[in-house]
Image (cartoon, rainbow, N blue to C red; front, top):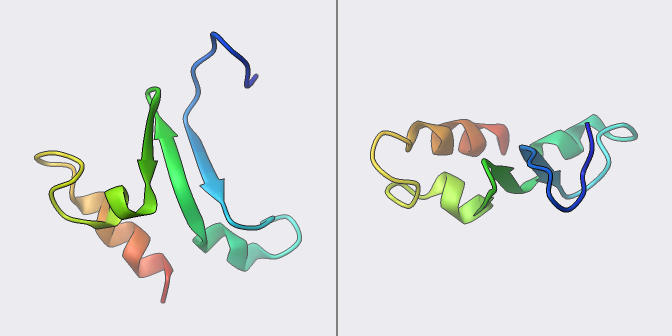
Length: 65
């Protein structure tokens, strides 16, 4: 895929390089989905993503263990 102006992509932004250290895959800083940026706080705080979308927070919180 391509990342450039006029294109739309779903991205997960990490704090580190999972190719050199796989534990970096659990260090999610933000996610971009359907053109909208979600911070880690958005993803892990119930109610911030809207009705029916709070289950993602459980996934991100479990990755930190």
